[in-house]
Length: 406
Image (cartoon, rainbow, N blue to C red; front, top):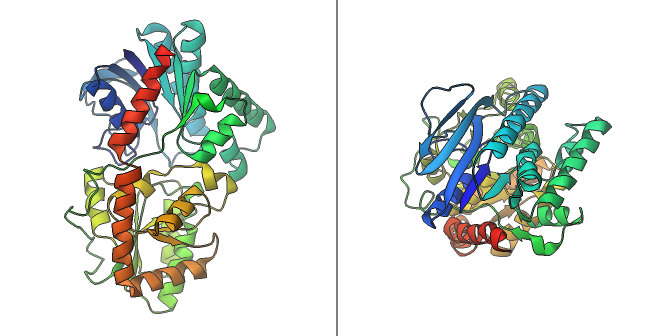
């Protein structure tokens, strides 16, 4: 079977972003299928293509994946208008590809929501099976965050969401809350499979050689955040906790913030203004280097803004990287991940918007190193037993490819 796969933010493991689509494409190929991946140029990502663009595109084989990369550079640091324009341009280019390429099934993974449009076109105009993977609930998330307030735009996005879900033969939801959100739009549960992000157990594991930046001493207790520094991440909570800990004289507790995003300059400015010496900012790094940074850390920070839509409607890559590396996780918002952490005793859950509880939790973690070792063991066990990328990829391929036979 030939799958036409749309993911605007596709990257190989050489990039510093999520690589779910790379693994899923490789699993499809290993099972005898052909994959054409259509993507854009994503900052901190790496599609594997290096040749020049011709007429806004370049194409080539990357680990047996036929990659079509559109010359549409996107970054999380871009403003809303610029990002929206890039989403729309990618949608239009993708529609043309969906109408011209030869394929048996069209697969699209959000975000953005507009990536579903070429799938809709392939479904209704070319009569091809369509599978839609939902990573975030739109427009619920941007509406609750206040990113989009215009009622006309919100209504248009809501309509596109409804059409995308109802057009898809099958859907993949990355969390239980996302699955429920899809069902609220009138989609039968039998058409939805929950397949969360997974753990790359061969890349992130306790045997990786540890690395710490020069500003971090060997005896320091390191709390790492590895991901986008955006509005949704609520990283002001780290600034507040770091200030409290520094005022308490707990300078051996260090925060390592790895990544980029629109809020990073403001976070750096806030840390400088407060004279915080316990926060180290690191630029995005490839996954292999991130594995070394995780190995050199003591706890992973799963931080998000206190927005109810996040509680059950997200499946953050960083959480799965942390537990694969055997890192206990500190989580600051309720929901399904907080439930997993508490159920499996592999980390600490603190209330949202409570900087004192956040700081207190890190002090206790630093003081109870033996308990942290036990949490680490349970985190790795959870990764192996429930979230192995290999196991989840097998389920994903069976679900996606079973669409053509159903």
